[in-house]
Length: 141
Image (cartoon, rainbow, N blue to C red; front, side, top):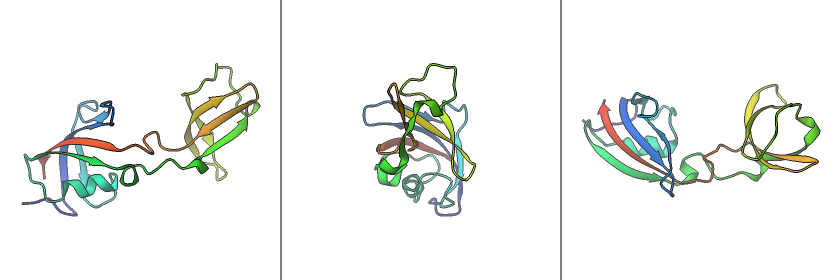
């Protein structure tokens, strides 16, 4: 039977970026991915791609950034005084730190730039602005 909304499925997958870099895979997690189609447990483009597939079927598909983790949002970057980071560690671009939000939540932020006086924090998802290609196999439905 073709997969439809509400079905719980098990898949093996490999996700790659346009340059061929593998950003995630079921092999990396040592187990297949299990999710309910249409329940919002995976990115929207992924939910749509599995509909109509059947157990044992394999497929490769591309999800544009807008249907994956969205485009990069410039409002999600913030320049703060370097003195705001209370750390004994060496701070460098590319590091991910946890920052507090106005409502008391914690969220990851990537340090995009460091100067003597300031640090630019980027709170976009690391895959924002990137198209994603997945190779999948439906294991169980």
